[in-house]
Image 1: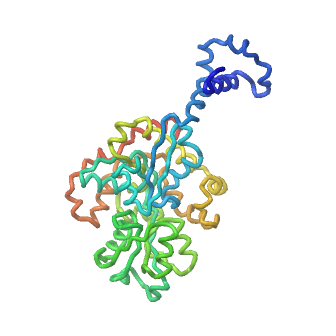
Image 2: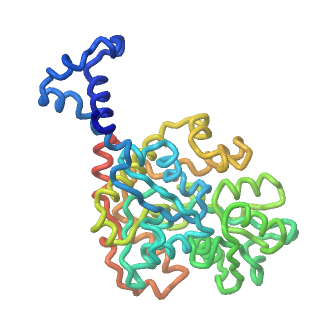
Length: 372
């Protein structure tokens, strides 16, 4: 009796040679055996590759995420849900954390291999002497908004009214913390004049605002769109569009969501790193032409928060901010460091080798594979 994998390969080969209209029963084992090995290799290579990758031959990679259901991580979610990682021969396990800073900590401690999060975490890591590198860019804008509770602050007029108030962020040190700080600085208010409170992500963050635990909240969609539609939250700072991101940086391109990993991961597991990037680039390509119905069918039902219309409205706000191809812009790292220094002035003098904070090599190979 042949081993099971060989039987699967034989079946794959039979499908290569038989027209769709011809019953498989018409081909005998003897007739099939007369086909030369050279011909089989030439004609059936794609089928053999499919048979191999179906088994996740590259093994398992764990990706840490801060707030798995938010739109910020949509390319990762799609690559997983649509089976793109599996096609690459990779089994991806996503571990969800309350904030991006906590997700990075999990990678640092060895609880995860790769992180999906803000590129600024890569820069901060380099300042601390830790070598991380962005593998593929997912977003070109922060995709975050700052909302004020009209229950807690019914007389709110401008950002100056937040002085002495509590602002909810996913955690201190996360991208929500940075975005809220940038919006305050732009309004002439020092981040030290408010109290930042870590409230996690998802419904926990939303409940913190609605219960009065915090007076304002900086978060991603679809949470912020949901709060806005409830009419008891006023959006007072919005970074969910390319225009808003451009107004924030003045000049240059601001990289945001990315898939990044320790340099050691790239060196020890190059095939897995390439497979991850292939999956993300494939998902970014799908996202360019996907319709609303396609999206709600693809993402896990829990991400829709029980309201497809809400989810699609939130997606419409940020759709343009997803990277079209996964490439890090040439000026992206320098722009991100300059923006980060606005709220952490000491970073302006930090010596960071920006060329070591990212690589586009894997994305270029993925783009060639998927014609992106």
